[in-house]
Amino acid sequence: MRPASRPRLALALLLGFATAGPAFAVQPGEILPDAALEQRARAISSELRCLVCQNQSIDDSDAPLAKDLRVLVRERLVAGDSDRAVREFVVARYGDFVLLRPPFDLRTALLWAAPFLILLAALGFMWRRGRAMAAPTSAAPLSDEERRRVERLLGDDAP
Image 1: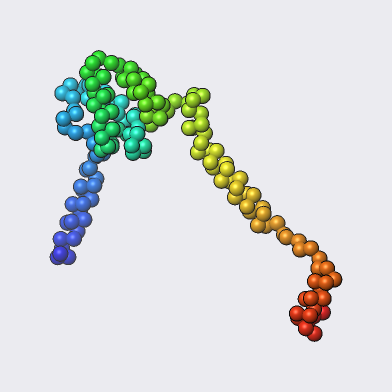
Image 2: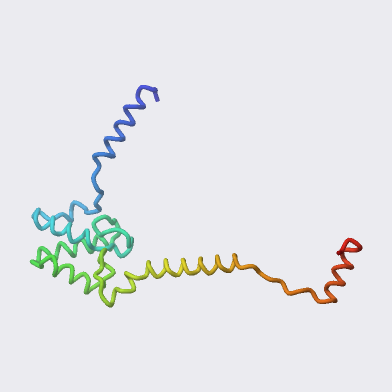
């Protein structure tokens, strides 16, 4: 590669990354002809978790289950369901875990509290471990027999 073409390549890459939008896994065959319905479907899909990937929305995931959920959302919207009805249908079928932001209630309290409980347990473990390592260990005094044995092993140099 010629030295003069390197800046152009860098500029082209920079422009490519700067103009790139989010990558959606929605296939062309899934897109609804009605733009308003498609926008609603995208809004709902961005709030639903891919149950395979678990850290992506179904809109971002290429997993077959995510595709099925995207199609299901679109079918429910075409059937005339409201956004809330579609979300409730999916939650009734898959549970609150399917929501990227599950509601805080009694059933999901552990889900919300788990990161803090794990952090507290780790801090408690580190605190106890630190105290155990910092605490001076006192050795029991030697018995007369042990003292004689040490003197015998060390020879005449013992005090």
